[in-house]
Amino acid sequence: MAAALTLFISAPSLAAECLRFPADGERQFDISRNGARVGTQSFNFSRQDGQFFVRSSIDIEVNRGQTVLYRYRHHAEESWLGGRLEAFVADTDDDGARYLVRAERIDDIFIGRVNGQSFTVSGFIVPASFWHRDTPASQALWDGVDGMVKVVTGQDRGLEMLEVQGKLVETRRFEIAGQIQRILWYDEHCALVRMSYLARDGSEFVAELR
Image (cartoon, rainbow, N blue to C red; front, top):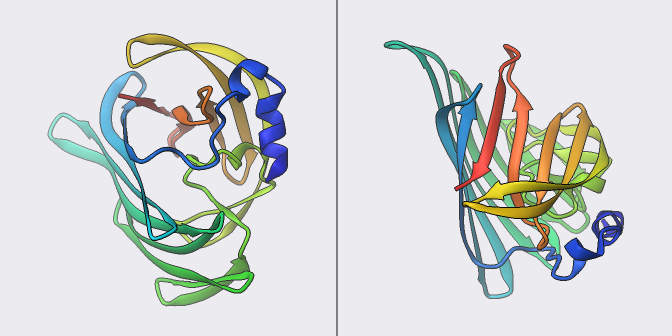
């Protein structure tokens, strides 16, 4: 995970307040498809009794007239303790395909079930929810939708000015390739402010901080 911080340190202006875990509060994103708004995404960060909690939600619906072409719903809760993922619960409806995930860390192993099928992964894994500062440097991400570990590589594409909440902000852009593909932009606090990816039909989804 230290490698991820090194990536941000390579740009001093982005490293001054690089946070491993975001401050408490909610971050809301609008999701567009080929420029048209189709949904929302949110992260709610909080701390209690030494634990760090992340409650996330994604709601997407693509329509053509009165016909629903695609619908995606995802709700998850992450619990972190001592810098490691302690527990994870998620309910996902991917256009009719349902995934129920429950997992917890026991010693150095993350153990859980997805739709009744058991799995085990490293207790040091970073989930593919993309808010975490160490995401770009990870060689594998744990997919909280299907419970599978996905092999990835991250490339630092340098600084990029973006309009975020009506202001021009200096961000650092990363491209994630492999079994998960994303383009991610983080601000000077290493907080996610924008994300883009391709859908199964080749259309582009973009999530931008509201």
